[in-house]
Image 1 (cartoon, rainbow, N blue to C red):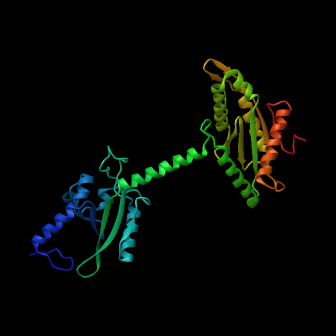
Image 2 (image 1 turned 90 degrees about the vertical axis):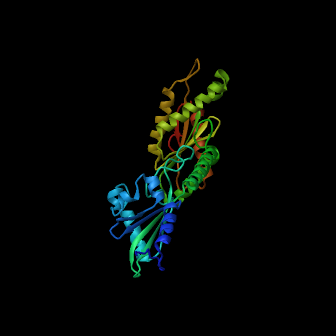
Image 3 (image 1 turned 30 degrees about the vertical axis):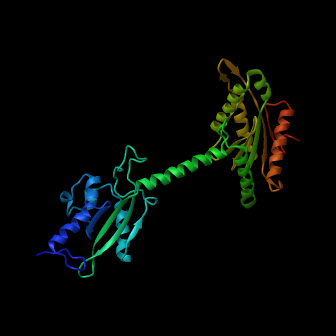
Length: 326
């Protein structure tokens, strides 16, 4: 009579209940021979793949499931054989091996089953490694909870650094960026220019059209800035109607071109709010960071002085530190 061997011989009845346990485990079990042919495909795998084990017994796993990451899985199997011990992979490293539908696709938070994987070498009765076992754990619930927490934290982080009205960076976070860029300049001497701008006669806009209309003007300026600036530039609402942008990898000549482009875009734009038609302009100050500027605060003050020079000399213009504010 044939026996199933695990170190001690089992009779046929014991073999039956052992296989029954393997089939009913709430984890996936796949046993492969050295040619990657399927030798065991338990009930968990049948349920989620929709394929009965008898139908794929002795079939090559990569031919049966062509979407499997073949080179990755072979590398993991080889590691397990060389190490003569289990090799693990968490869902954070690779979300899944088999693309199964989650157990609760409608009530859960994911339609895909996240999986932790263990690959174990199996020894024959002669002590040689003849097969490997892949154990698949459904960790969808814990993975989605962790991802949900990460997503919530990212949203809270975004809220904490964002100005609610304009959706640009708020003053506190923007000033952190200013200090970081100043310190980076001290290490690497890269070109970086600070641009500050102020909406001309904004108080008159509020007094004439009301604060809701003034808020629409602020939102409009934010949209214009986003459309005219690069993704690498750091734009923020400094306070009230005053905005600031750190222009990365930009010398004063390039920055003047950017500032003029923004100023002209604002001048050409018309704000339509309810039945109101509003035009506004922008005064701008620029200062390229140099080694003679001793602090981030001094950099800010120099730029702010250029901004007020623009406002005091006619508004709707750009003033650059050391160039046209003498």
